[in-house]
Length: 242
Image (cartoon, rainbow, N blue to C red; front, top):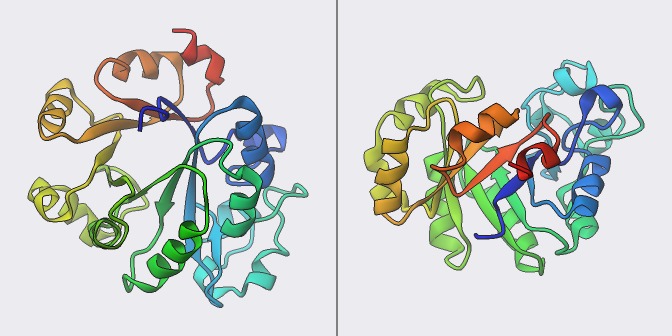
């Protein structure tokens, strides 16, 4: 986990410069920069594991479809932000990275726990690079801790994230579930991370990562109270030089 000081959020992307988030181009840039990569995994209708943050294609493709309602062949036809990039399969990303940099894989699953996770586990057992897993869903964290005992698994925490459903928001307010899911780390919304919370988690042996750092000012606020940062928008040299 010491390799995860600076983590490129959804790859080293720049949406405005034609390098879409969670695209092969963004991941290529992160690999070339030697940076760990955070990415999002969800499942299509035909049960392919794909790398996309949103449950809807609308923001990234302009088409108002749910990822879970599309077949892979339908999803891959939708260009990301009008570029030549498309939503990649997780298997494609794993082949590209090939252990060159560590991965932080966020599992996007708010429905039945088990099938997506089994597919992911099977795929990762054949992958020889370094990776950690995280999720907002405590059920996913618990499943991964139970079935992937040698892998660091983390709980994402935020009271403000728009990607949370109402059940997840309720659970986020009850830290007691940590004793059941036993996360190895917390990936905390930096707007809500305090020195007191960080000390409390460190006393429990839980590492703390802050997201999403988008400026040198953000980094200065959290650098002394976390074990690593998940960043985007800001150039990595601007925070790594501090």
